[in-house]
Length: 265
Image (cartoon, one colour):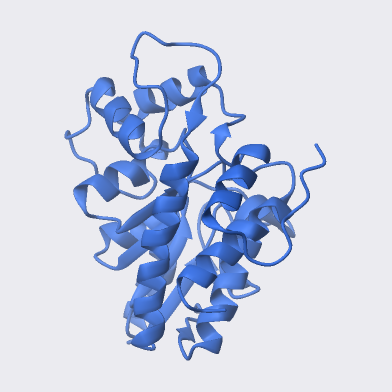
């Protein structure tokens, strides 16, 4: 592909161009039929697609889900469009990054305690790690998770300041809210104050928001739950992007822009 990461911090226009070129946004790899399948399964109550949230019976109409995704992500809003290319609007991605930056700036200004976690270590681990390092440098406490936590899927561990799911010496991709539940439950049982902010994705972000913690994160066009949660106010910011592109380095300009906007560079 030859889309080299931009050295330094891109301008807004340069970032939009980079997101499209690397397919983090624009014409993304996730096809329309996959998006619609996930929207349908969420609306049918399949829990794996709820990402740690409790959506009740508020999103049982697939068209309502599609409408939110068209508004917040930029997927095609036509219910009759069933197959082919789908899109993430890079302008919506950057606008969400700017909202996320404002919440990070608040965390830095107040020296808040922040927990990072990812269900997408192959794509987003370094985005979270770099953000954690910047917040620590600004005086935030990066929450250290309790030892010895486990879920049905594997062990809950912390790697480069980011909570992850580990199984068979491998970092796992997970949609589950159970790992975050394990962390917060252990913190409560140990008498530890919960984080002021969770920066995450997938079920890690969903469960934290559902639990009443300020939660922000990233989600793909086929993961509607966090965007519905943002619409309902359960999750504060959800950034739309392809959460696993060809190279994790492609996210570097996005991270640089985020941290610059947050005043953390």
